[in-house]
Image (tube, rainbow, N blue to C red; front, side):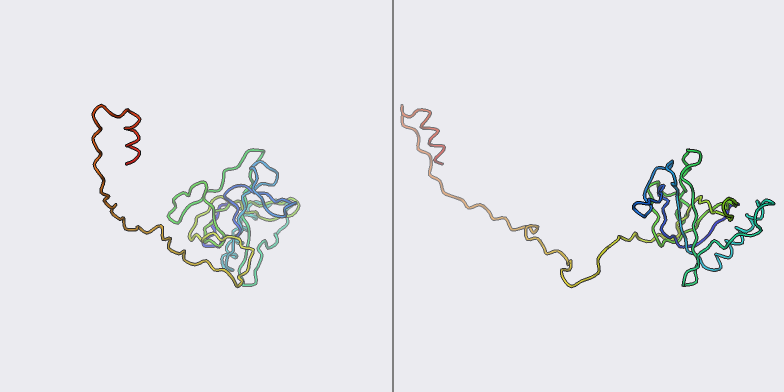
Length: 216
């Protein structure tokens, strides 16, 4: 069952390519689509009203696929934050049966498809297209399979800065480089030169003529 979750806040989106959790680095790292544990993942923050509507749709999907041996209900999947909002996650595996899945599509607010290299930023406001997939394996519930994202309001990317502000050097407007200014060009001074005397008749060889050039 398909569903659109509109006007929610993107949290730690990792959908520009596939990622997996690295137990050594203790964080998600880029990986190949066919690697074990690879996936496109997107967390999002929503209001209580949005959470109720999504949960209702997930319950309809669960009831439509529920088999006789499945539990009657599934646990609340959302996390409630201190400000009263709720967070949840949509996911798409990097591959099925060793065949890479199609990367979730990105669209702008006018529904134009964004380029492959587009990277969604944390805090952006988005619409999320998902498919509800009920399951009953080790536990039961409804997973949200990520299909596409529409960017309503793209936030600027924030750079990680490990420092706090301290007293000291502050970057200011660069000083003007005096060499960048055009200096007035002085006219060359005219120097009076003496006329070159005519060579004496029958005198002088080639070497003496070259010496006269060097003296000018």
